Image (cartoon, rainbow over all chains, first blue to last red; front, side):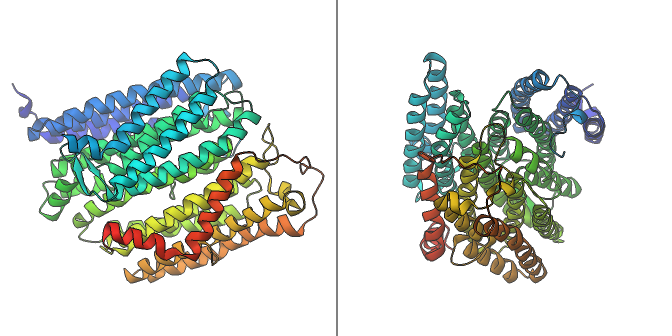
Length: 104
Length: 480
């Protein structure tokens, strides 16, 4: 059984659903780290889209893009967790609704 | 091969120097003097290299990046912005005890990201450029690690920025699926023919526009801008709100141009026009009620994104005046916005003091020169002749009218009139109000930040009095 036996639409729908779950998570969660994990999920949904298009078109550019997305996500994670840590040092909280010195 | 490296010299040179600078930071203690000298030298040389490639028009590295004209013009703007920021940042950082040396290499990395954005000829390169710039900005805005406000700004920027990145790459993935390529030229070709998934293409374009609008701080994705611009150290704000916005538009312009053939029902054009109108109205109206000068300038920068988007509407209507209008306006905007923020950074005192508009009462008596310069920048931002801002607006407005968007121009004029209220309000405060008790009375000299102010003020006046000079250059490079 090869990859093509599952239609492209299935992959695209799955990644669209994953992307939506991630988006909803970002909008509803309050913990900065969970919000960040939801963003990672959105990026992974994008990766799935890219890989499936790439496989179905027989073009490797999409798979190459995925590596860059993963590298960028790693860089973002490093910076993002450092920022969360810095926030925790000055404010002892990671909940975004408690960081409201400025109007959000 | 040689051609690739020769013509992409500005980007490669700057990236290598930024990396070297980071190593120098790590190896030498108390290196801020060395890194400062190295970084301004690097930016100067990069600007010269970019000026040298200005006439060479083409692509490099298998069509991944464009070299010459368009990118090189932006390279010069970025280097200019970064150079002026570095010079203004030196006294500010000394006063605020923020002299960690990474500042210089972070600025250089951010500039390399912006240059990659301006040179991108493929969605992949654009993505990498945007991320390099954004990650540097997340760090820079949280640069005052002990200040709650700064860290808060950093976290908000990071979360919302990463969220927007998700939309951006999803848009890129869908466009890739619809057209089969990341390359700008091939997307442009594919968009002119029948697409395999026309609906995916439209969704992809929409998501891409969301991502880029976020970076440009356009309505309704502008909410982060006032908070981040207020919380970040003032010199960083000066850099983000000028060079960052220029970079966003340098990426926006080719994207709008390549997807416009797919826009047979003019949907994208109308959406851009509506975003543009909403952005300038929201920006200017919100700026009216602000009491903090950084927030006021932040909302004014949102409004300026709205004016600039009029040029994008003209580009999507295949009107060449849009490009030259945006390029001229961005050059003018760099100097006026940077100058205004640098004055704020000179008057600011540690612990976020002296940032209320009230504190500017009677500034003309305490700092007559600073008040006069602030007046120049405010009048230019308001678009009052003979300063650069007026001609910038004029070109964008005519471009919009000639593309058939008279209603958009009427809204732009109305919102400009609204903006005069708070720009002139600040001038009135500086000249015709008695200084109150809280206003700082000690004389503090701006130090070398005065170089930045002098250059910005001269540029604003010069571009305003002789707009033909820059416009001729733009015409020469882009053939109208």
